[in-house]
Image (cartoon, rainbow, N blue to C red; front, side, top):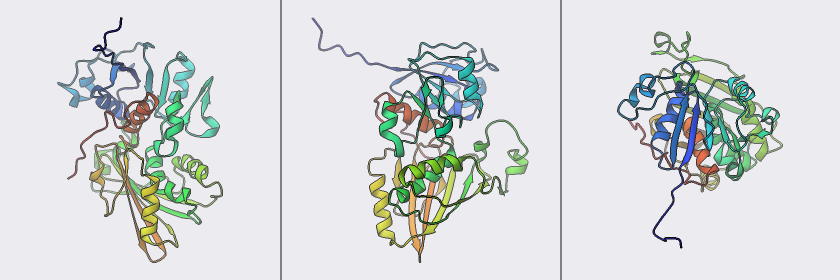
Length: 335
């Protein structure tokens, strides 16, 4: 006889590989407070034995958990928060049981041509584009930060067949987008009160952006002229995208509102946006306005959350049938 007053609550068991960096730290912060997750281990060879709060000092008082150099596959899913190129190397050196799902935050498996390793086939993890596929996926390639911000600004136009010419894009990112390793261009003295362009027209995220756009608009064969800027702030991306468009502003806004009608974390604003609306959140906000025959689209995200760890958790929620925003009801910095 089964007692009707007994409920079994299943917690998703999670492990993190590469927990000492920015994306690993953000994943820890979210998952420690996720209502449906048990964080089983955080792996780091260089910090094994140290408390998480020794590296991520804001976690003092939040957890006494320690980094480990042991791999425990008694989990449901692992987050690979390692550098580009290192995720593939890790999976080659450490075969993970087939039953364990993988969410990779590097760029190693994002493109169709490189989306598999062994018997693992990765699905591109942009929920606004691939929600149904993500729900059924066993392995997720989490999108890049710029790629997320720019795609969420352009995909409604692609779906409507409106990307009929070259696309002009300017975007500014915070210093955390470069990762934790110190470099001359991320040094405080170089970054503060300063702006600089890097990887003009050649940013690596353009490849995944192109694949996503062509999945909705196969005839798209125009240039995306992308100029990325290094900003003098820690986190966030804000992008301005403009193209020629014959539709009026109201018609374009309706296209965006319809495209994102069921989106859990992407919202169309009816007024101009600013970066701190999204910093410290897993949201994207977009805004459109017309100037003559030019359409301007603004898009903003937090590069470490919607652009990395927050989106990874959103994908995990979808994979395990959880509420899509579980663990992601986060407060924006606002001002």
